[in-house]
Length: 214
Image 1: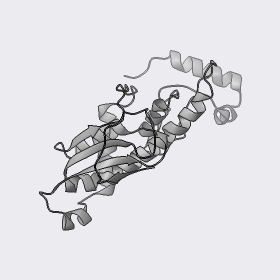
Image 2: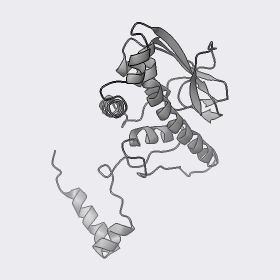
Image 3: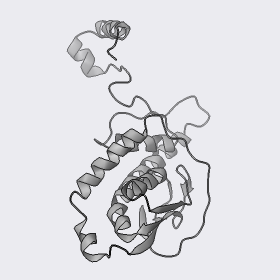
Image 4: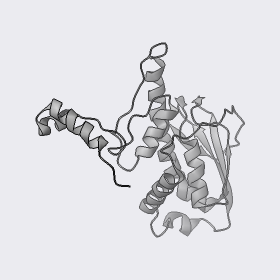
């Protein structure tokens, strides 16, 4: 859907900042980025280290390759800045904007090594998040004029939940519970294992009345 190009960029529409959902905290993003970079780079991006001079400065633009609702722009900037605080990111399209093929979402400038070592991580996040946001927007737009809300679930990719639920919110959907800890929802398996829906509901009500450990 999106890839980097070295051609001259052009300025396109800008929209107001979109507020992050409460669960997208700095702590959560820091851990997510740390884990992803460790998974991909470990002791070094040796393809880049062996071929690109340490002092080489470059720029790259993120080019939209498919009509979509763009998502992951704010995350992209955080990833770049986390990896290399000296990278400069110029954003032309904000999260939640409908985009057309050929639009330029952002331009990153700085160390060529830093750009090459983080570009795939950024693209993986933005491609998946934009796909989710686009599909969410498509379904949510069909509910306009009704009282129905489009909710997401916990059926997310392990270790990528924060991004996938964030993308749902960007696309106009409504986040349901984030995990098992923030809401009780009794499903078929709970009823089957308990043996009685009446008893399961009663036990759940009694459970929430008990003092919780801080």
